[in-house]
Amino acid sequence: MEHCGWCNLSEEDKRFQVYEGTFWSVFLSDEQDYIGRCILVLKRHCGSLPELTDAEWQELRMLICRLETCLKTVLGATLCNWSCLMNSFYKESEPDPHLHIHVRPRYDQPVTVNGNTYTDRAFGHHYAVKESGAIPADDREAVFTRLKEWLNR
Ligand SMILES: [Zn+2]
Image (cartoon, rainbow, N blue to C red; front, side, top):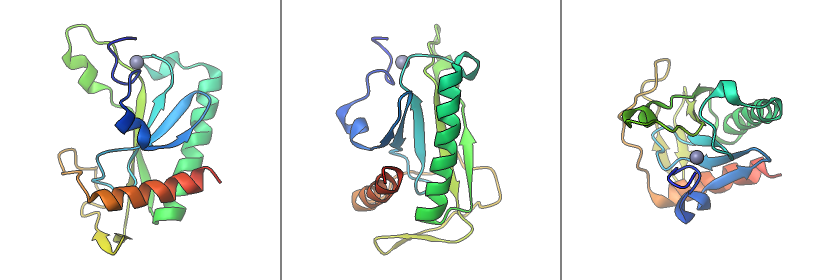
């Protein structure tokens, strides 16, 4: 799909790929309002979960297990909030969604990256949608390296 942003990711987006499977890619999100937040993107243009093939579901299940274990092991996440929202595509007059899934790790204790401490202030509640996701580039890089190394062991 030539106009789809998810089919045409920028080099900057691709730089933060932590894992590549057969059907899905996993990227560290540029929004790090929840440390370790990632996006799973289907590698073909497909608009909804019911349209997935059996093989794509199977890999998605494996990735959910692996990524959740990774976020708990590497960053100390207590649990993960998984969401498949797709709302922004439907602001367009002719929606053409591309399936992707967000994972926001949630923490009952502060996470420390490069000596900086990040606290999940709303732990136990729905994730905040409008929280600022900017963290220092060095911290994002450190989280990226730790997740990528664990996922590709
Ligand atoms: Zn697409």
